[in-house]
Length: 213
Image 1: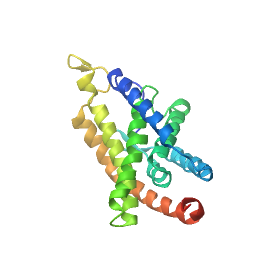
Image 2: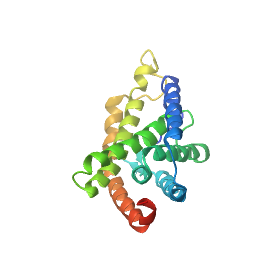
Image 3: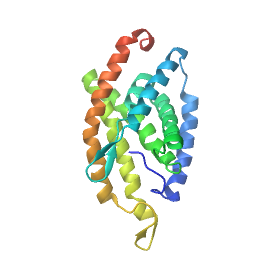
Image 4: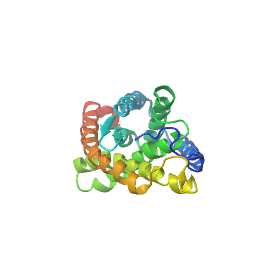
């Protein structure tokens, strides 16, 4: 799901940089960390790091990966998750070449911000029906809505950055990006939902004193 360098235009990544900077500054003000939870945040972030490095090829040229974003969001809050996953994505881009530098702001908006908050609100909305359903769909939502934003950003590149009819960056429009990016992630979201359900319940059970404090 990571967007590499060269795929998006300055018309996209410059405003995305400004938006992500504002959101990170807001996260800094919103976060009030419990010292006891810091090691757990680091541990789950490391798990997310590994999950995102395991890339699954899909027919049609799309690659997918799990994220673990929903687990962090549900355990520690969406702002903590946004900050932690932004750091994970930065390390991946700088050291492992997973995602680009110019596309980094878009990647954190799609994966870290949209993933964290879609999981948070999906859980809140569905909790009235069942906690298990809420946990599952929180994980699913974190993958689905992130992929939808990635598909949208890639798909509008030929519209906003072309010379005549020649795209300067990503050459395929929404008619290609939406089915090729979003549809596979609908199914990957099922796996993410199951991982989120089991992961959150396991951690809350094993470390009840920390998460119930």
